[in-house]
Image (tube, rainbow over all chains, first blue to last red; front, side, top):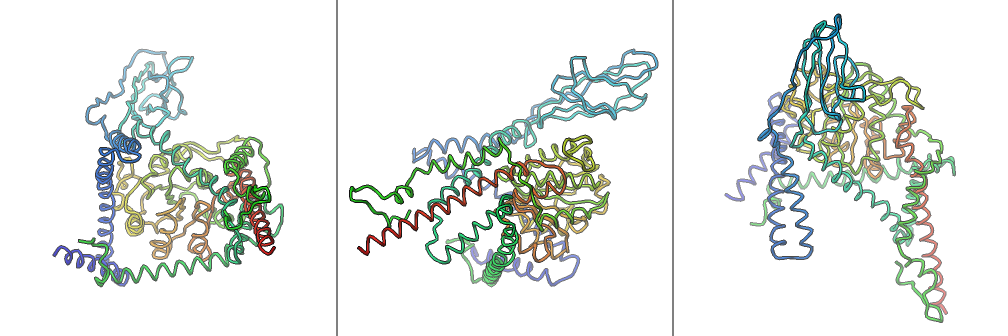
Length: 301
Length: 308
C-alpha cells in the first residue's frame, strides 16, 4: 500500500495531464487549473519543509562542532532573522494611529489644508504634486477648492504605512491634518525591505559579479585549442564576444553578420537537437512513471 | 595548466612559457577590475549599432496602442539587475509614452521586493518628464496603482503557475491584486481573464522559470504575442524560439539593452555599460589568445627538446 497507492496516484495524474490536451471540454480545463493550483500549494509547502530540513541538517553539525560550524550558526541566525522580520508584528502588537483632523479659522475667502508630519514624510494634497511635509518655510500647505480634498502621507522609503484620507475643506477655514506613517513589519515591512536591499541584493549581485573575474582567469588558464573541436569552440567564442561588444563592428564591419550567422545556424541547430533530445528523454521518463516502470521518485523504502 | 609540457633550462629554472602559465591569477583579476572600472570613470562612447533582434522587439512594442493592457513578467533576482534593469526601464518608458496599461507579476520568490522597487522607480515616477536632458521623445507620466497599472505579485509553482495564468489569471492570483484590491474593482482589468487577453507579454527573465517556460507552456497553446529580455548567457537558449517566431523579439544581455536604449531614445546604464563590455570582452579575448600562444610555444619547445 505504501508504494502502490502513490504509484497509482501518479499514474492517474499523469494520464489525466496527458489526456487533457486531447479533451476540449470546459470542465477538463477547470480541473487542470485546480490540479495546477495544488502544485503551487505543494511548492509553497516545500518552503516550510525546506526550513525544517535546514534546522534538521544544520543544528547537529553545530552541536558536534563539525567543520565550518560557525558559518552554520550564521546560516541559522539569518534564517531565523528573516523568519522573524517576515511576521507582521504591527498587526499583533501595534496600535495604528490614524491621522487627526482639526479645523480652525483661516483667511476669509480661502480654503486651506495644512499637514503636520515629520520631516521625512511626503505629502500629497489634492491634485498638487507631492512635497516634503516640512520645509524651511514651515509645514506643507495648499490652497484648495472648498469640498472633499484627498490628502496622502507616506515616507520616501518603502516599509511604512501609507495614510490617505478625504477631508472637508471649507472657505475661511484651515483644515489641519496631523499624522505619522507607522513602520510596518512582515514582507513589506521596513526591516525586511532593508535587509533585502542592503544585505541580500548586494551579496547576490557580488556572487554573480565574481563570475567575470573567474571567466577571465579561466580564459587564460583553461581555454586551450588542444584539438580541432576545441579550436572551433574558441574561434566561435571569440567572434561572439567581439560581436557583442560595440567595438567589434568597428574593428571589422562584417563581424555582426558572422556573429549572427553563428547564432542562427550552428547554435540554433545544435540547441534544437539538444532540446529535442531532452524532450524525448522527458517523454520516455514520463511514460515510465505513468506506466509504473520508474519508481525511483517514490524513495528507496 | 599544461603540466605535461613543463620544462626546465640547464640551470633548472622553469621555461618562460611555463612561468607565464603559472603566474599569479590575481594579476588577471586586477586587469579585469581595471577593465570594468576605468570605462565607467572615463567613458569612450563608441556608437551603438542596432541589431535585428532588438529592432524586432522595438517594432513589436511599438504596435501597442493607447489603452492596451500589457503583461510584464519580471522573473529575476538582484544578481541580474545590471543586465536586465536597463531594458526594463527602456521598455517601460516606451509603453508609458504609448499610453499602455501594465500588469506586473513574478514567478521568482526572490523577486517581490525588487519588483516593488522597480515599479516605484520606473512606473509610479516619470522616467523621462518634459525637459529631460538628452531625451527628445515624448515625455511619460507617473502611473497610478490600480488605475494605470496593477501588481499581481508572486505565486509559487514555477511552470504550473505560468500554465495557470494561461488558463485563468484571476484564479491564479486569488482574484485580487498584490495589495488586496479585488481585481473586479479595478476597471483596467475588465475583460482580462487569462494571458491571451493581453495585447502583449513582455518577459524580463533571468533563468528558470522564465521566458523559456512561457514559450513552452502557454505561448503556442494560447497564441500569445511575446517579447523577452534575458541575460547574455541565456541568449543562445532563447534564439531558437525567436527564430521560430514564438518570441517576436529578444534582447540578450547588456549589449542588446544598449541597442534598445538607443532605439527608445534615452540612454541609460546599458549605454554606459557598453564601454565596459568593449574593454572586458577585449580582456577575455586577449587572455584566450595570449594563453593559447604561450601554450603552443611551450608545447612546440617541449616537442623539439624531446626530439633531441
